[in-house]
Image 1 (cartoon, each protein chain N blue to C red):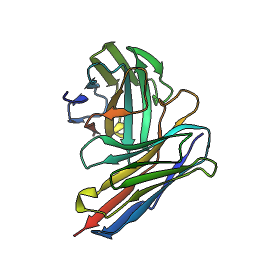
Image 2: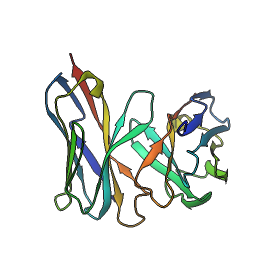
Image 3: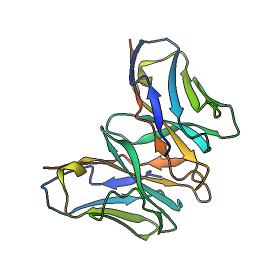
Length: 114
Length: 114
């Protein structure tokens, strides 16, 4: 398996623009997680899904952030409008059915908002 | 709210040295504790997972211990190698929600020199 796939790997955009980050989990994994990593706050869980249904979005910073999982093999994290403080590395992770003990992380998307 | 602290923030050692990384957490009501490795520009890789009922786990040159009552875990690396250079993160999962909502420490950046 190719592992968790994220695209793009790098994104540079201007303040106010819409940004969409994409994730393809490992086939057969039914949990999907979105994290954000910054120097100031470290690695934080934003939202996670089980069987394509959002379970906990309490980590989503504000209404400008939204996440969807239209099917078992694809998820998006959207920021609209983007702000400079959204600059971070965004990771997607997935885990095995019935067990979330081990999460497999993607390589991340480095987002820079100018 | 769970807080996870890692000491030291950075560590530089000569090759071959045995070393210990420390992790402390404020809420002892945990489901499990994991140690991850993060290489620059890459995602996280799970190294060891300790269930709340366990005291330690070993994998090769790595040994992780858990003292839940005191809120501490250590990662012991034996005979360090330059390839061990990376950032090491510990993460705890709360009892409520199982292994889903990981709270990460800020990491220890390790450099093993020739």
